[in-house]
Amino acid sequence: MGRVTHEPRIDFDHHSPEFAKDTHGILAGLRATCPVAWSEHYDGFWVISDWEGNREVLRQDPIFTPARLPWFPPGGSLTIPKTPGDVRSLPIELTTDEHAPLRRLLNAVTSPAASNALLPRIEHWTTHFIDQVIESGECDFVYDLATPIPAYITLEWVGYPLEHAEVASTAMHDTLGQPPGSDAFNRAVEAMGQMHAIIAETVVARRANPKDDIISYLCHTPVEGRLLSDREATEMAFTLVGGGVDSTTSLASSALMHLHRDRSLRQRLIDEPGLLAKATEEFLRVYPPFASIARTVVTDTELKGCPMAAGDRVYVSRYAANFDASVFDDAEEFIPDRFPNHHVSFGLGPHRCAGSHIARLMFQEIMRQVLTRMGDYELFDDRCADYPDHGFSIGWVTMPGRFTPGARS
Amino acid sequence: MKIRVDKSACQGHTACWMAAPEIYVLDEFGYSGIDVVAVTPGNEARARAGASACPEHAITIEE
Image (cartoon, rainbow over all chains, first blue to last red; front, side, top):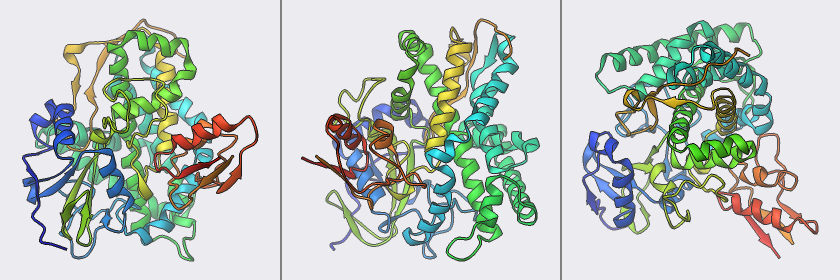
C-alpha cells in the first residue's frame, strides 16, 4: 500500500455553528464533489458523505472498527472528537467477534416480537403524558411529550428506578441539545454521571434480587457459558438508556415540526392512519436522530480509491447518505409512502440499531395520539429552538405550542 | 420463482418482513428465518417488494 496522503482535504467541522446552520447544504456539497475527504479538525478524520461509502465502512466491521483497541488513544470511539471517560457503549464498542454473542443476548429482547410485547406500556406512558397537558391546551411538545414518553418507556423496560427518571432524561436531552459550556449542558454532564451510578447500583441490586426487567436479564442470562460482569451489564444497560431515551425524542420532535409546516400531510396522516408505517421510514430518512457515527481504521486500507492508514478516524454521515440521489429518487422531496426506503438512520451492518423496532413503535404511538387527541396543534415558531450543535444529533430542544383542549383519557 | 436470503448479510432490519410478513418469516432474534424458499404462485410481487426493501441487499430473487 502506498503512503497515505490524506487527500482530498476539506475544511469540515461538524460541531461548528456554520454546520448547524446549513447541515443539508454543506453535506450536499461534499457528497457531490468529494464523498470521501479528509478534515484536519480534531486531529484529522475522514468524512464519508455518500450512501455507498456508509455501506462500505459499516459492512467492513473488522477493518473500520467501533471498538476501543489498546493502541488507540483513550475515549469513546463512536464520536469525533472522542467522548471522554472509560464507560464503553456495549455491545457496540467491541471487535466483530467479541460483539456477536453480546448482540445475540440483546437481540432476543429487542426483536419485533419482544418489542411488540411492550405495546401496552408504550400506550400507557403516551396516554399518561398527554393526559398531563390535554386539558390546558398548551404544552412544550418536546419537554412535556417527546422527551418523557420514550424516556419512561425505555427506563421502565431497562429496570432503571423511575424515581430518578428525570436525571436520565435531562442527561440525555441536554447533552445533545444544549450548547457545550452552558450551565444546562454542565448540569446534564453531571446528570450523566449520576445516571451511570444509578444504573451500576441497580445492576448490583438485580444481581442479588432479579426482577422482570432488562437489567435482571443481563445479570442472569449466560453468554457462552458465563455471566456478564457488573461492569459489562452496567455498560449494556447504560447504552440502552442512551440509545432509547433521546433518539425517538429527536425523531418525534422533527416529525411534529414537519407536520406543523405541512398541514396537508398532517391531514392525510389523520385521514389515512395506515400511511404512518411508511411515513415513519421517511421521517427517519429526512430527520435521522443520530445523524452520524464514527469508526477507526484498524489496518491500512482503501475506500473508494482513497488510501487510509491504520488509526485514522472516520466520520460517517448518515444524514448525507439519506439524501444521496443515486439511491433515492427525488431525494430532496418528502415522499410519505416512499418504497423501498434504504435510509441508514438505524445504521447498516452488524451494529444496526438494536432498538429500532421499539423506536418505531414508540414514535408511531406518539404520532397516533397527538394526531387524534391534539390534531389541530400549532407551534409557536418564535419560541421553538433546534439543537445548536449538529455534530452528532439533529432535533429540537424546545417546541412550545397550543391545541384545542380535550379530556383526559 | 425462488427467494434466496444471504443470512450472513442479514442484520435484522426486518424491512422484508415489514413489506411481506407472510413470506419473510423472522427467527426469534428478529433476523431472517428463511434462506431459500419457493414463492407460491400469486405472491411474486410481494416477494419482490420484500427483497427490494432490504437495505443490506441480502435478498435475491431467482426467476
